[in-house]
Length: 149
Image (cartoon, rainbow, N blue to C red; front, side, top):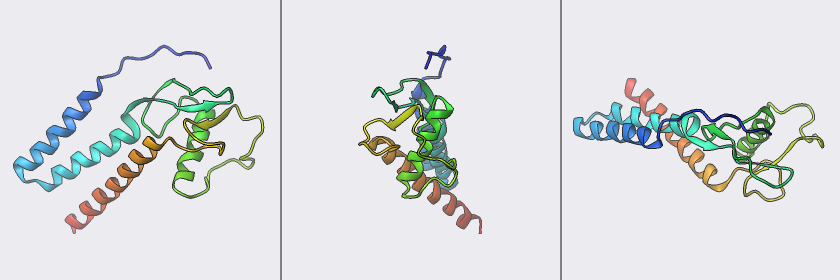
């Protein structure tokens, strides 16, 4: 896999300052809706905007270090299939969108970083953050729905 030219990215602290400012404003104004917005912003940041690396292991045993945005995404379609399998497996479910032949012996990628011989497992830190962000996202949505009603 060739190296792509890296695009400029905003510093990570910009997002954290914005989230912290929203949380501070929600506390100072006693606005629970603003706190929900800050929590939802953090969830979206972790899922889709966090600058990170692909972290899918190739068959040679090296982790892919291509830059990606968000913990849910990978650098190529082959790596994305492996990561999708890992996300569904972390939820304890088989991937319902997997191709008809999920165990393709010619698949170019292997497992996600730090996983055992089992194919497609997420790294522990990614599992923890994705689980927390998913639970917080559900709580935010449920709280917003209950607050509207």
